[in-house]
Amino acid sequence: IVINCAAIPETLLESELFGHEKGAFTGAHIQRKGRIESAQHGTLFLDEIGALSLQLQAKLLRFLQEQRIERVGGREEISVDVRVVAATNTDLEQALVEGHFREDLYYRLRVVVIRLPLLRERDGDIPLLAKAFLHKYASEANKRIAGFAPEAIRALETYTWPGNVRELENRVKRGVIIAEAMNVTPADLDLTSRYAKYEGESLKEAREALEKELIHRAVTRNNGNLTRAASELGLSRPTLYDLMDKLGIRERRKA
Image (cartoon, rainbow, N blue to C red):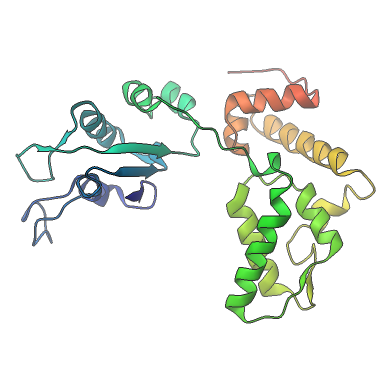
């Protein structure tokens, strides 16, 4: 059972997770099981768990500790046996510092942590994913597109993809819609200026130059505050530190 905590309004999320009794609120004409109860003896995947309010975090923590829930508007405790997997793009360690995420819930969930590498860390995946998205959207649009122009492939491989796979998919979708030739170009992908600036450099040199530029701009915009710069770049603070060390960037670090 999957639920995206960021995609459901706060007013509905509690009912979606825990269910509700008949008459619990306006429009609750029947009793309804929530996602947790529906996942009985199975797995519940909580996507974007960092979007949960502190109130729902407290209720989720109680469920994890006691394996019991109460539906909205109910008084009966219901036993549940559910495995929980959670994911987020949020830097939860920073959310702890800022008081947006409960420390007890964080450590309750942090049993086995799997870090998914950023798209730019998976060089070989970029062309494969791009081609898969191209075929998907070309088919949906009923357009005859052979593939990507060579310079478009290089632009895709050079760009650092701060928005990861979602950004790649959206750019390819845009390229398919705009393309007038048989091959998608950097202009179709809106990568022309980013690509042209590094013309003549090797892929490694171009990527490092662009990463340095993006990091420098983010740090400057945030007055040297690397925590905010990391958040703006879609990175965790430790990942930004590691990347800066790798690229030889010596910025004054502020908490």
